[in-house]
Amino acid sequence: MKYVSTRGEAPILAFDDVLLTGLARDGGLYMPESWPQISTDEITRLAGLSYTDLAFRVIQPFVGGAIADTDLKRIIDDAYRHFDTEEVAPLTELGNGEWMMELFHGPTLAFKDVAMQFLGPLFDHVLAARGERICIAGATSGDTGSAAIEACRDRDNIDIFILYPHGRVSDVQRRQMSTVTAPNVHTIALQGTFDDCQDTVKALFNDLAFRDRMNLSAVNSINWARIVAQIVYYFWAALKVGGPARPVSFAVPTGNFGNVFAGYAAHRMGLPVEQFIVGSNANDILARFFESGAMAIDTVVPTISPSMDIQISSNFERLLFELYDRDGARVARTLNTFRSDGQFAVDAGMLARARKIFDGGRYTDDQTRALIADHYAKTGELLDPHTAVGLAVGRTHRRDTSTSMVTLATAHPAKFPDAVRAACGVNPDLPTHMADLFDRDERINALPNDLAIVRSFIEDRAQVIRSSGGAAA
Ligand SMILES: *Cc1c(COP(=O)(O)O)cnc(C)c1O
Image (cartoon, rainbow, N blue to C red; front, side, top):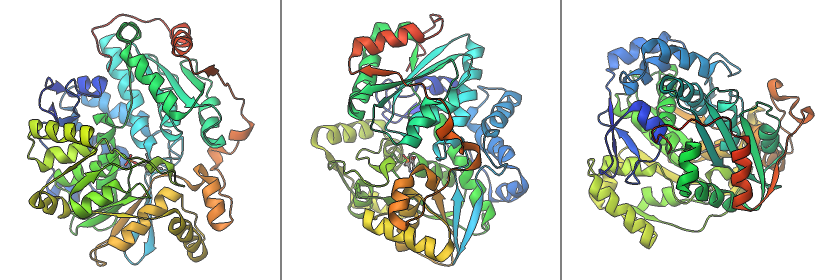
């Protein structure tokens, strides 16, 4: 399997190069040259497999020989060892054909672990095979940083530096980062905002001498290997609720469009799906797109579902590439327009194609709190605010109640205790494997918002850097 850029101008690469490269050189995102196919008969036969065996069957064609099968099997087993259930993504039935898939059983209680836990051993394997070492730098407003740290801790060939805004992340989020004692993990509490953190990381990447010297790399949500790991649980869920004999609908709380795009990929591989329902909070650029065909940027509004407070959904570019029949030049033109004008629109035919399978909707914070309270009163179960948005928009936009609808529960309620308590008066408990989070020692490296100081902090702490053939991304 080879990979092409959504903007058509970057070199065609194999899976391992795509993993290390991240963003393509032409500014595009990598996509598989074609979609591997799994027939309905074969999907039916996958029903009895464990999560990790299913993951191997789904992921293997995308790796396309870049990693030996025995190594890939070991990487997948390693990835899902740290989940608190062997099922990895257990499903529960809510009644009325509604299901919930719990994607929060990984080490940091959010669905990002499903992909990040795969990325850690995958990076380690590819880097060891090449005799390379990388230094990952990233900025986080909370969730992504802890998931990346848990994935990269104690890895032989990786140093990871995560910047977060000092005093501006929740106690749970900070402790999930600051209590990790692995020698290759370094957190920086920057005295500034999240934007300052992002600007600092960007400046580090733009310092080409530093970037090359450190072999700087990233693990952001456009990395294709993260999408691949997420495709697996769409097959898993469908098989649990009557697929592939009958199509299934998925309701997905959405920010960067990575999670729901993985579902679309599963569909393109042959999984029968009736509908993908894209749930947004007040930051509803995607909902407006699926209603009107116009993508128009607005200012970001803070909400109680902060991981979806996004105006530019970076993975949407991958869907656009498909809607444009893989015309990279057209994708590049459209996104240049979007960057300069803050908007673009697709024509009616294109919108109709997208709406064949996608619907989008929004839910306000007040509505979300009311749903959390109502759900608790009726079921005794707590929902995190992101999951609540997904479920709510799924209910309002479901086309056919005789089709099973699976809502993706993207975070454990204890990850967002303040919002949950405000909604229904109940404090969500941390799961047992994390119950001592508030007793663990913290290591906080508070640094001023000063690029030179951050740079020398990284240079001092990163382990021996070997120069290598420009795999940094
Ligand atoms: C990241 C995140 C999302 C959004 O997922 P995308 O892949 O960016 O669409 C939703 N919910 C939670 C809890 C998240 O952490």
